[in-house]
Length: 425
View 1 (cartoon, rainbow, N blue to C red):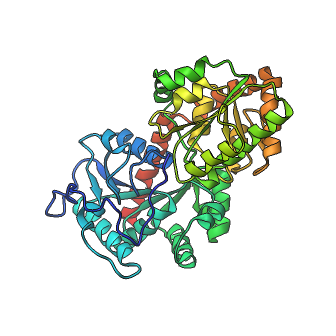
View 2: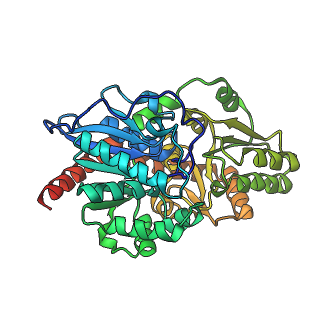
View 3: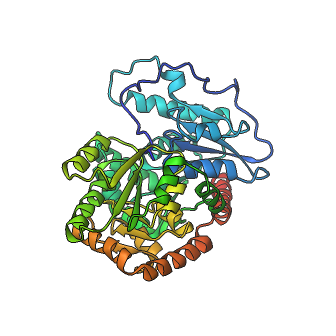
């Protein structure tokens, strides 16, 4: 579950790989047929934002829209799953051997490159996710007077503030201008994220459209039935409770909190057999493994590393835990509820609170409170019927409100509105 790579001021290690050129079109194309939409991301890694961008690009109605993809890095789990009919343009395969000694040079080249793609391919609308890409698309689209839809996936008062950004004050001003741009339609994944973005950037709240994140319910169900030996072993365990945490192993995801909660449970009830499976990889893996060793939890905490399909682990577990410090609307919460797995999370997200409906469809505990997390895990053992009832309600809610096809229809309506508005502007 890797995050979108950021706009960087250094050349990536793999930039010299022999990759496809920017575009096979030597001239600007003449628009005929469906409107061309350029979907922009840092890469096509396996994170939630990348997954939804891929779902959008591959799911658009071909009679109305022709999708193309722009990435900075031609890499990621979803790259091989892009149909050949969808062109993929990237920055680094065309610029990997170049040296950029001055601050801001890479960003200027990326904007120039993106503008070239928009012009050559006669793009009607640009779509981006995460503020890193918005910084590029806003500049490119403004100079070309192209309409843009920019998605905000996490509350910027936490996400932007905690990110290791250079020139943060300047980027905040640029983002505020980007969301105020009349040719931009900002989309937030929840009302709470929209509220936070409006406050943080000083942008009128009515500028933001709220469109909840979707999941491909059928694909999640199919994926959960895949036979994986390690996961089958988990399913056969006789532990009192099998817990799974899914996500990138980085500090804001709070995996250390879940590990500390296991220690408290072992102290309170030594006879209980608890199994915690941590699915994913990231920069904190070594420190988390060291924490497990230091607390002597090797027998009950296991790391899978990076997996392409986490759904069998979610289905095989008795509880999915999201111990994060902050989130937008995490896809893994929707996926767990879709599969009927009870959900426990910290109060890391207003969007999660909306999803769980005052603990009707899951349970929230205070952020960074291992004792509260441990108490909730014990309650999952002591009151299994109550938790299963919540999971059943959550499953019905996700199926009714977060299906992929309704989301695609709403996004396509939004695209048509923005394209038509852009033509009149």
